Length: 260
Image (cartoon, rainbow, N blue to C red; front, side, top):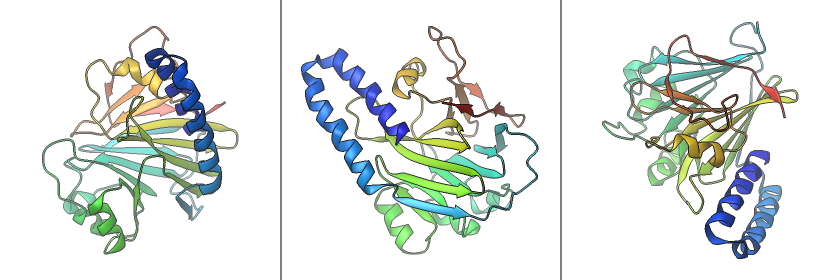
């Protein structure tokens, strides 16, 4: 809910600049409707996992690291999330045998190149998979892949594992966009949280600076497209600077949740 409303506030500022204050009257009604709708509907999916950690928790910090060609692993206190584009080399039944153990997979649409549909996922049966909702995803979810979680714009998935909570929210692009552009992963333990945005769209040149306004509160952006995922740190960067994506490596990017 907090992530959604922060996004709407940023959208409201953009609307004021682009269309004038008259547009804010209409937008205020949309904000109220958004608040009411979220309060009534709640998350679309709720998952509770076995709290037994995959490995001993040695530090409150988390990590995002390269785990294969195009495959990123997000780890935090026993919760492990995989993210990759559907055209990555690691997305195949053969490559999945080498994947690390995980609690959730975020599969973003293929940006270019090959795409094998949802068939490879049968090799990791039982692994919950978040995908962008479309006709193919709906058919697969109702047939052979019951662990598939298709998400439409503003859908949310809540996942609990021990003391760790994860909220995934499907977000649009810039103001006026109706296309699902990515998933915000809000990972928290106690009162501290970390917000990692997994983009479903390639980042065009010059868009890095706009992400700071489009994703208020986001700490890190993960671009899982192709064989070399990239990360873009937003928190801790100078407000006037232009963040530059960095290639994700096996050493990874370490993060620590913060109180908000």
